Length: 338
Ligand code: DAH
Image (cartoon, rainbow, N blue to C red; front, side, top):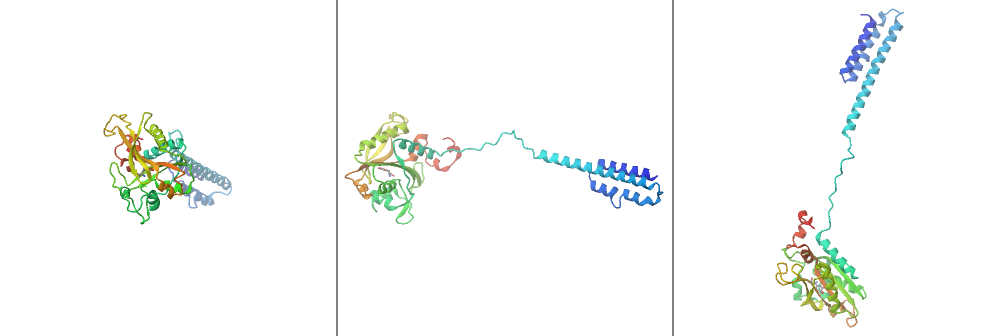
């Protein structure tokens, strides 16, 4: 085989191998490397006659270039292919519908609190908050419940020290407000309260109340009744009536428990009102002169009324629920219904 045929064969072999082999580097070494086939041909140039050498040299270079080019173009097509595969794998379908984040909503207790606040703000009350960790003085003493007063028993709470406790009612906010506000005063105060009661269908060691307080010259029980009547109609419906029953709270005189006509039966008597036709919803009364005086307000000049209601109790009636504990379990199946 003359040298020309040899070169053609090397070229054809290289092209053939490139077709079916992906190891480009070993192909390059095999043909173009220091010990490669083409280099071997160059080494044998000694046997070529001097006049033929330039021609053969040119031919060798052509074959080298052809093989180099073929390797380069094969390499480029590999890279192109790899890029395609990568792009396919990373494709984002921008038309795919997004995942909808699940939106929560206000807890039924918060909803009820908001509704109550709205009603009283609509009547000109402003909202005041007080601390949940409270002094004995504000929770009891200033409200005419001295140490050892038997009425403290019904409001047994959690003590941090002898004089610091978790408030058992929102009534201490009355005292704090009157201490640093000159009448006229017209406030409500919603918030969390605590009692050392074991949890059952109608009791919870943590629950919510809303307090109301109005102090001005010439405030009477008629004003209290008017405000509560409007409130009851807004919450329980236009035909709702209210009824005051005499009661005792140490911080009001006179005091009353306030019932609304049953929203379920309208007063005829049913399961909801236990046949009574009325349902008790809050406590109220005229602020006791002792409490006014304690807070630096002259009871001979000013008078006031106050009321306090359990927000859970209103929520239970509003949503027709019969177990308080459901509010605190945070079971989504329950909460999603409201
Ligand atoms: N603080 C009372 C309680 O927790 C409720 C109450 C009754 C509040 C009469 C008042 C009121 O402001 O005048 O049982």
